[in-house]
Image (spheres, rainbow, N blue to C red):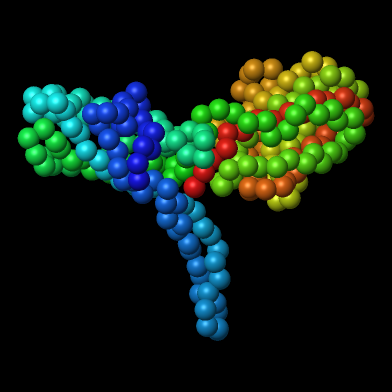
Length: 256
């Protein structure tokens, strides 16, 4: 391949002096499949799948105008690769995809007076890449009933764990009452019970597993929901007498 734009942290891996020529970063992480054998029958049933941390390799060459310049470039390269947990950014499909990674194996080989080859193995603990910006999952939507199902569409190639924000504009009967937000397809979700008032805000961060009410960390019940790629539903419910609530959501698209 040629002219792939990529960086590790602030270090550019595609310049006139340092050229990346090959990488297998495009391969998805290994899917770890757990299967239980069937009792009294042949075969098995899949009970669980999860992706393992992803390893990938980047290879290319370092070429200075002189041997001395090449050696200095190698030193700078090695110094940059020693920084852990850096953003490995690669251009793809007209955008940037980011793998937060750490270099775990570096090979430098000389192949001429002023040329050296390099091969670096990286490890990405999450196994997936992400965009470098947020995408709207649900534009601000008003709810005036005790239950609501709001349609969403998840992009990328890996499940979304969005931030869901709610604001109570008006309500009646908010003492010791519950608000619940779930994935309307799987019914997995979280709920918060408290004394609610007009003006209260709730922020549910499904990725970081936190809930803030009026910017204060708050206890909850349930499991944080996720949404698979494609069409889905954010479901809302409460046990107020009456309400007007605004719900919106953002997420970061992720890629296998």
